[in-house]
Length: 603
Image 1 (tube, rainbow, N blue to C red):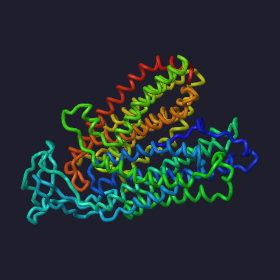
Image 2 (cartoon, rainbow, N blue to C red):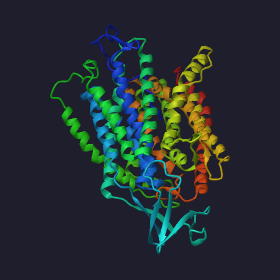
Image 3 (spheres, rainbow, N blue to C red):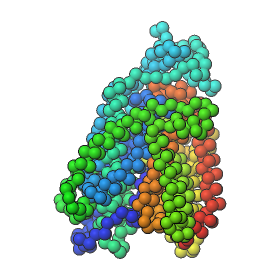
Image 4 (tube, rainbow, N blue to C red):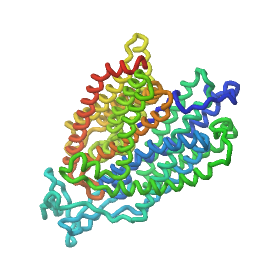
């Protein structure tokens, strides 16, 4: 997901203390925009660079297995969208945007550098009928992209046996001549790994630091951009567009260079590069030659400055988030036949908190709206809530990019670009921001052309197109899988096509989401509704990790034992979620007419 800031920021303060138009300009805009552009660009470099590596880091270096890795990834990205609710509030009331951004940047930098200290890779083993067997790896490279010659063997009485997964879920242990030495029934074996408890603790602490730091950084840098322009300044939208380009430039560079460094020099330098980018971001917001002195300052309040107390409480929150990650990793699958209630009961604490808050807040706010507001306001709030619910579905499927789609790129994609140039698995995520940069002007021109003729789709129709588009992207990749080669690998351009289709879908929903909330919400609860909007994205990130778990594949040390089974598992999962997305898109299309009526002219 690529962030889409908007000029319609409900928390934007009124600035009358300065006249930016009287200062020097940068591309026709206030010069401080350069420093905020750079601060955000380098932060996005670090965030997306690390995100591109995270799932592969968990499955290959820590050998946590697909289920635990994608679940942890989903929990981390969920917190990335949840913590800004607190960080934004603290900045509004006490810290001011600038101090919040500076503190968040420092915490995230420490988190990235901590994440780079992964130590020695975990050592894989197999448990067969309760007995543990050593697994050795030839030509091992502890990097995102495995060596094609890399091979794993189970050692039984000194003999190295190749592990080959069968289509029915069983496994054959093969001798050097290819003959089957032993046949293992399905569910009679499982993967394990020896990993340092200390290194695992460092991993989770690093993710906790980044999650908390992000809460201070993410919501407040955009607020400072809004402060650069006085009310009515026509440059405002163009300024946010320039700022938005910084997000995409940072994303593209981070996903390319962090993956390149990790492949060329190992995980520490790849992840460490994200930390370096975050340090640059910190210096740009901290040492700006006085250019940002007039912006992002604390609100005028009587009494002592509470900044130090907030910083201490933020540091105290790190072990709390750590506990949530530990609880998430320890979650077990619900028992077969336990039903929906059993599933809810088996959710880790983070899942219970997210779902519980969302399920209570949506109907609760609607009841309040009809009791305290007019009928018109109540109907507008119903329309907003319906779109928020469908928003969860969209981002749940779209956010497979960092989990199941990255694993698919690593395992079942021929990533050859041209000649000997092979793209690494994490770099394939770059198809999204590149597509956004190229397609955003075209989509903007299309909406403008349609609007001038009175044909521009309503917001519900745009949402429904987005849902059907994300489903179509998965179906496009599934279609491409029918052309897989003899090694069960799909051509890179089929995966690229999915990302292009998904980017078009994103441009139908992301730019209008925040604006839609500000227009449909009752004025007294706009801030609360913005919180529900970000909560919906947080829930979607968590559910995305759960969905990715359905595409889990049996591995040995992070390597699949049967690429055909792997391909079949991914295509089945992608087909199901594609059909669900398209079906819900059609449902929303049918609901678009009553929703448009309840929106009372909001476009």
